[in-house]
Amino acid sequence: MHKAHPNLISFKAIHRGSIVLEDTFCSLGGGFIQRLGYSQVRNDEKILLPFPIQCGVDLLSYSKNTNLSIWDIVLENEKYFRSEDEINQNISRIFEVMKESAYRGCITEGFLPGYLNVKRRARSLCSKLLEKHQYKSINAWDAALRNEPLIFDTLNTWISCFALAVNEENAAMGRIVTSTTNGASGVIPAVLLYHHYFIKNRGIEDVKKFLSVAEEIAM
Image (cartoon, rainbow, N blue to C red):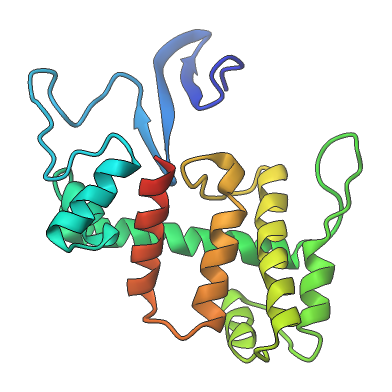
């Protein structure tokens, strides 16, 4: 890990004291990485997106003039770089990683790494909320969440629990999705999981729209 550039990490393969292979990778956000210096676009190739966006005004203007939703605009731009099947697969994978990080945070007890001895809180909060349910797998946890009563105070506590669980996984160097900025790594999954479990929705279709719009706004 580079101290000056925390988004960069280098790997070295050493054989008999000599470096035989070395490469540096950078985080692109959203769970994606890329080898430093590598570009999917040739240096002499201009990127001509259907909807080039430099600021929020551009996005609003396109939406107003075309009657397209923000999600549709983002999708058309993404299709410049990869197929719609690839886009769908990547977004689904991102959501699964978010859900898994929330689950791990909700079942892991103890203290976070470091000298401050910060006690994990998401586990006890989740256990209190799901006291009548037994869950020893992510599928059982998923089913228990879907049976939660739709009470405002309970749902509000769940949002905090999701965010706390992911942030604790982050602090423990677990696997999370950085959501463009690492500071959103708990907020974005918390809001998305609230919608996914407690609000009437269209499943993965809503997930795709949510994550695409969130990433575009963040960028």
